[in-house]
Image (tube, rainbow, N blue to C red; front, side):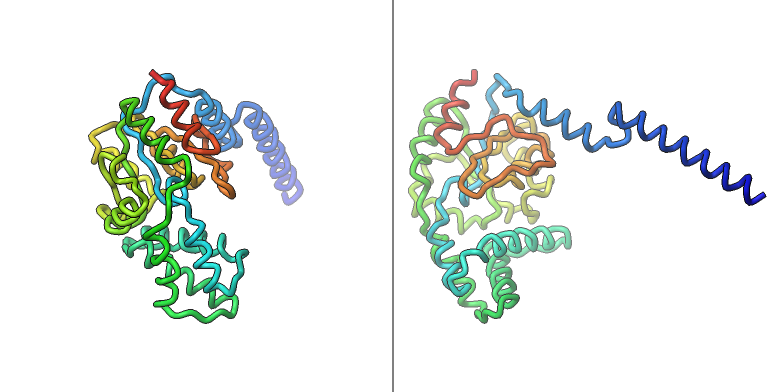
Length: 273
């Protein structure tokens, strides 16, 4: 009896192995791989139709964070290697906050993340020091060199420009005034008004509703792979600015535009009919 049972189990295992081999050939055994391949191919085909609204991420996409990075690096004991860890920790805990149905200002989460990273590396900083290192320089950082001309060109071409950020309303208002960007945008959207941080899909759905357009009529322009991925998963279109150190998420579809600066993105968008 034991012998017959063992033979039956081996036969069943062989049948399953044969099924998986055949399924893999048509993408059934690894549906996620087939999905990525299909989406990547589609996303590589640039639409000839203009998006109705261009949504812009703010920090790093439009504004140069060099001064803030220097300030944060200083309180971390002049450890530039800790800067990426701080940013990813900040992003991680913004998502923890969202999943936990909580909300805190993005800058406050950034200060808390800075304290965590410092503590893990034997560096002692107070909450006040953490906030000053981030929020002080963040209010007055300049735009990247090509940004103003590119935004003006897009406006002149008839595009509706809207900023869309994880930062607070007051924070981005102050940033735009100090950087001279206010005049280029028809509206400023902050997730502060809906309580869920990007890249949660609800954030993109909310922004599309606010502007009275369908998701596929929206295009996000951003320098963060996670933001582009979130937008694409919410059925938006995407334009990626590959600022130094920025990378697209390999497991998400590719955006239809990817350039090194906003001017090149603008040139391609203006060419659309």
